[in-house]
Image 1 (cartoon, rainbow, N blue to C red):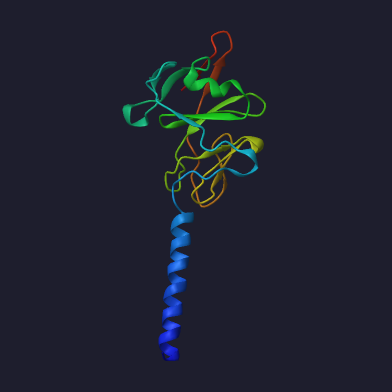
Image 2 (cartoon, rainbow, N blue to C red):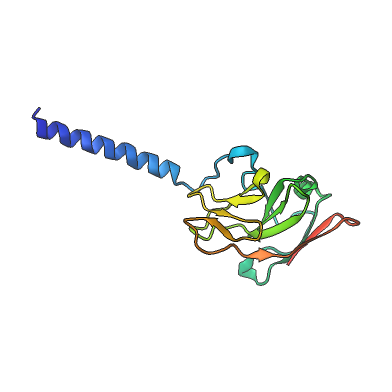
Length: 162
């Protein structure tokens, strides 16, 4: 084998390894979050028990209520947790406040993760980070996440999102 042919094969092999690592590292699968974060939150069916209203932006205005005493949403009884309801991620901060943001990263649409210990959101695909108000904290996303108003009624154990 000549040197030129050998170098060509080595270059192709290295390129294949780099491509494989990029494809697996840039997938839209949720990676476990570092530092004890919640990975995307529990995904729930927005027609399940404990849900009323609309959680799909394609069907109009987001306006729904979830009952955290219901099995599907009981995760939110604890601080530092999150659930994905339709197009929204509802999180309960370390301090116990409820927040609701659009679940899709504004960079490429991957479902974001809630990092409970940092009270922020992170995209598992490319690392964009967002504050609890949806503001971009780190790129590549350049647009904020849509923020919804989340209110909790402790008497009924219900979170309303509008």
